[in-house]
Length: 382
Image (cartoon, rainbow, N blue to C red; front, side):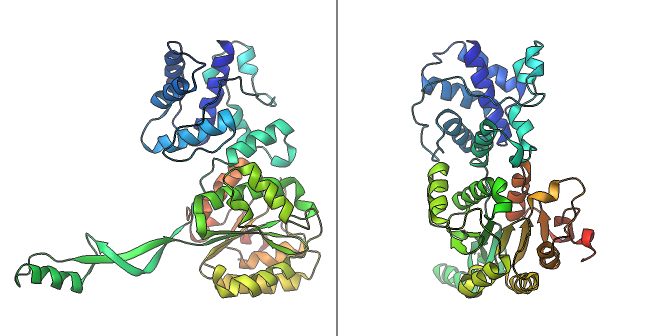
């Protein structure tokens, strides 16, 4: 029973890390329910957790994804039952300082959550087991696109007067104007473009950032485009359409010919704008560039292309994993040339930083408040 308890408490931590309301009281209720059920029956385990760990209807889809990812490594499809699995003890990474409370006899449910500890850890410094856990949590991220107003109208309870529908309603009533019909602009997801640097200096972070791109492509659908940049530009959108994260990563790795090579961001950005951006992919989009800014080519070219990109895009976000390091200053030539044209400067070095990046993509910040400390103000480029 101890193995089952540890497994289910680990599962509750995963639900909580994904944003669910799986607090200690709900965890205890789940364990109490399992005491009266057959823990070897996946359906009974599924429903025991669903009826106790879900606080509101919004938690149901999140719970299904967590259940499938935790017990089978798959991503659950909305509205379907999780695949049959056997309840087993989850492999838990050994973390610095984690688990001390359990060894001292403290309740498991109130111990420090391993997933919560991992949220702020630099992915470049994780063990293999910790990387696997973070990869699983990244797959659960929701990185939906920011909504934008369309030019098209749709019927609405309030808004602009809709003359055509109002007149037709009046004619149906024999010429008596009884109801005024209204219309409002439709909303559509704003396009998101992610350009991930896969050069040698970014190799400790490229896997996590590409997994984040896969989560964004899965959440945003056709509104998300993904490219890799190094010594050449590679479009990965189709490769990352696979539902399974590991399958998608294998396809992306096979498609990238310059993994861990050099960096020519200016040339790659120019190619992106010439081939895709000017035609429409970058126009009005949220463009995310994930790179440390080590430019081996012409930094002036990078600055020119960033200025060109800024004129086309709705917003430009730059994620530099080194930004989170103490004392970091964006002094490299590439980073200094790019920053004047960046709206949001963030890190992207950890699970928590990727969650913040997802909120930025979804429009969770605006204006100067979007810019973290260390952005344009750091360099005097504001």
